[in-house]
Image (cartoon, rainbow, N blue to C red):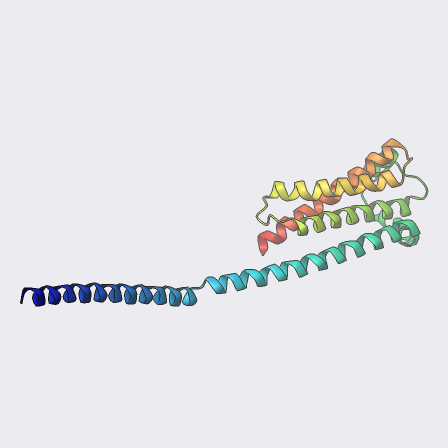
Length: 212
């Protein structure tokens, strides 16, 4: 009888251990299954997909920006070397000069005459003005391209101006290196045109970002 009771107790203990093991195993699998379902239902895969999509979109945008920048530089170099554009615009400015003389008040005419004496004007005035005005636009556009490539989007006004002005100065300096030798005053004036273009493009970019 004692042996039978001992065997029964041992059998009960084994059954209890087996039941506990089964319960623990079932609970573990249930917890794992719930965790897997939560992972599948979580927005993490969606975030990964959106991030991957944004990365592809950014890469495509960067490629188009590079293509546009290279094309713009090539066109700018061609126009600067060909001189046809500045000559045509210069002739139109010279045609408009008599009308401007009638409209501009005498004090402003005096300032313009004195300012002309200080400017490094070579050749006809009309083509020279067209060339310098075109360089201001060109260097300003270079600053906008650099700003578009800039990774940091939340730029302050001074940071925006720093990017565009330094880009305009760097590009104008590079042009002056290729056009060397020239008079120092003329080179400094061209670099100042790069800075002016950067200031204008930086202010325009800041205004655009503020509105959008």
